[in-house]
Amino acid sequence: MQTQYLKKYLSLILLTIALALSSQGQANPLTIDNFTHSQTVFDRGDSTGASTNTMTNLTGTDLANASRTFIAEATVDSFANKEEIVSGESLLKISNAAGSAGTASILWSFDPINLNTHGNAILLKVLAIDLNVNVEMVANDTSSSGVKIFGATTDFLVNFNDFTDPAAFANLHRFRLNFTGPEAWDGQFQLLATTTPVPIPAAFSLMGSALLGFIAASRRKMTL
Image (cartoon, rainbow, N blue to C red):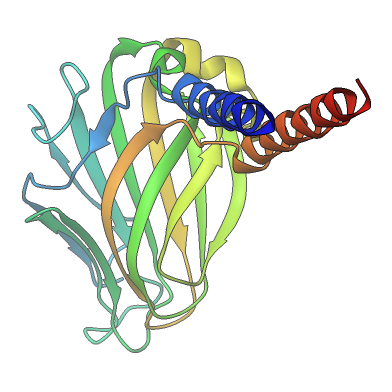
């Protein structure tokens, strides 16, 4: 009889965890950019201001009527201090020559969309980074994530609630990444998309509650 109770409550535990995980996967992720669309811009710091390049009719995105602008600015006037941004073959590459601690920005413009229906966080896949680099995400030109530090290969997540105005994601039409770093920093990135992080601790909490329920039920059974 106790074996039947064990099977019953183990099934309950599995169902509880499955429901917790599945509830986090209801939103359909949206690809902001998978960086398959080729584009290049570079700046040598030999003129005032940044070098820019805009690509209209962007592909490799789920956004409607999207365009993408690369903005690069090297720090000094020298041929050896080039700042370069390149995309293509599912990669975004940002590089600085030996003497440049330049800035790089990527700006997307697109038809307004409610990103809340596609998740609650922004995912940026970092494939390679050789130094600590400061990164800021900006929604609709005003809502900032604050400066984050990239220093390792990782799936980097920023929650909508981390932005100064999370409401911007209900009617998003512009999104920007700003990169700044030390001299000669380089990075490679693979995907920018929405996601819904799974709260693993919460799932384990539910599992623990189910286990406690099983123990309590077993004790009651033994006392009867």
